Length: 417
Picture 1 (cartoon, rainbow, N blue to C red):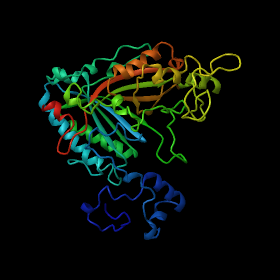
Picture 2: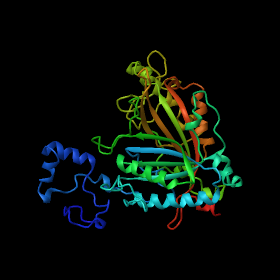
Picture 3: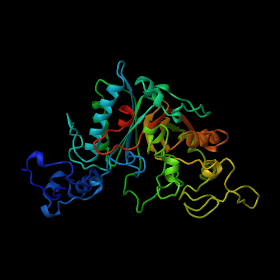
Picture 4: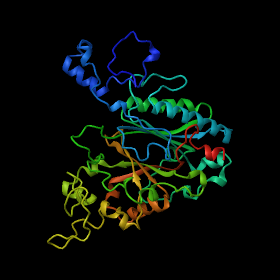
């Protein structure tokens, strides 16, 4: 990595790469506030002109056993985008597209510009934990003549009572997940992926989301959603003995090209915040089954304390209500079903009456969606207290193959096998 303290403006442009992190947007804001503007910042002594944060220098590797963006930590910004192959485009065009996308992803995740026509949007930033993940929808296989390679696990999801799905913002031949800890880095990747699609694929839908920025809390904490609830307490962890079994397709999986891959269920879940915020704190906590302040179960303890489902109050009522969301979603209440949730919150403005269009871009990962998401969602359909405060407005299911080895592109074993 180049010397981060260099401030020589005469250095040739070719020598100034995005890896030479000079600070972040947050650090610049601090400098402007303290020094009274850009002039004050420029006048600072050279020896103090060091990076104020290492956030932008964090890098995720593109090549590996699994694709990036699955087990990596939640990022501050995210974009989800789906494409459909254009009429006449088939297996050959899809292979060329995935090759272009993989090359671009590797470069951008390494903090380098796109190979062609880079927009310079992220010129001054480092990789910022950028991840780019690719998946295939059910319709991809018929469009490319690969129906015999379509996994059974990719069968369409069943209908659920909370579904109010917009078909134009659901499914798709190809799916791309982008995440980064800098908004410009994330947008730069989105634009590069869109441009790389060229004449092979057209945009079907796109959604943007966000999470708490790294370093915003005094200590690492589970993220909160837009209802103010701690969200993700019981997420499986890579250190769990059965993590790979629940999340990733085994090496001996069927079909073979999905080895070490996973299945992503994507749902745009609108939160009916006006209704939710009318509830008392006690009512909100009973809907979820956890304290709002720290995510601890209503049965007592801290966030990670095992929930006591049998504990009753003095009047004989269950402390954790029978229809509480946290009770219903527990793996031991769903035959051991487990999935890795890795969502983004979203806010897309307001309806004409002022109702916020906001909620969760729910993304969950599992080795088998029928045993993961579908099992849990069917249980929620039968009596989740949270269901009257949310609405599922878009949906997608995508087969996400394993990671690409050095010199390979994502999906190569499918498209050239």
